[in-house]
Image (cartoon, helix red, strand yellow):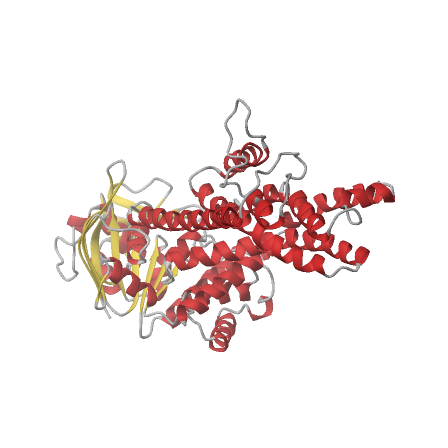
Length: 267
Length: 302
């Protein structure tokens, strides 16, 4: 009971601190403005085509919207999460935290989930804003169900995966360097077309962009914004991709906790 | 509860010996730890707080062996710690910060925690600004938040490291009084290089130099050992000579009055003066071995 209430308290405060950050909302707000600008300036016909509301079945429209956002927004997500652990050192709270009886693993888990959920909020709002537009335009309530399923299976595992790395790596790499490397990784490992002279993780089961889940559960054929073809995936491949991302996330957090513990023991 | 430290060593990377075979017993109540910068006070505080691991030696806090992981965890439950340079989350309010630290200290009953936070905000006179973000707080106010967080779990061991450094005189007095009030049924370990802070709050103290404890005993022991070594010398301006340290210089117009500790070359213009703790500290720091050569009343550890 004590452990749960402590974990919940850490999660709540880490969520609160991240959600109140102006730096969290500015980049997502800018993205939204650009998106709205395109949609407002575009003639109605083009707007309709961009959102594909009246041309395709609702499932395809929703997964296209999911892929559109999932190709860009995780970059902001990873970058904005990267300072959470170094911040404890920068604000010099770390020393005080070390003297408290709460287990490190519990504090880290609460911090991870709290900050990941908070950083996910703008993505969630933009995503469901688009879904709301689809719902109003078509009156088709299936859009909501498809959206919930797509968010949970295509976006969420990738975001949890990115969150774990973005929390852990900056403890060992200078934050701006990690952010730079992360953006590079995103383009190389997710958006770079496979089958060229440069080897890439794109198109493999290990891509947080969620191509396998999109293909397996929603029969998506292309990654939005890139034109990269998604290899047709079976349901078990989709599940494997999600499971792999989640297992790696857990392993990264366990490694982080172990390394921090080891560091403490050497002080 | 007592703290027993025996042959404690701390060797940092690069072969820097911060603590050198340190022996010390700290009883219940207010206890002062005095010494110049670099004496090893902060290292000792950090070891006691479980931040640093000692290289060797034994350390027991109450019934807990604080050199083991299990012992350290147990000590953390009864510990309140105010670091020299307290960090806070600048975007949290004072209330939120204390509430968060309370959660991390295991105060899991929400209502009891809120009551405790409010009590402590009252104690440190910050109730009026409880809803203000910490980034708007002055150094003194942050220090008060620091003592409030240290007291959240009503600790049996309270460690405060240089709590008054950088505070204005009024804040310093307020802080000292607050600490003195806390030293009832717990160990309050006050580390500082400001002699006045110890003189005003502690009956017992230890003095450290270069990783050793060079004195442990009462303030009275130290002052008594300095009796006959403190002089007021008035001259036309020339500095007094001899085996002495000038503690203060006061320009009186035509003459200059010096307060010195040691043995002046001439006693012609020297008037014996009642020593204070600062004089005792200076006398001890000049030559710890000689300081107690003729007086074994204090527990000297060189």
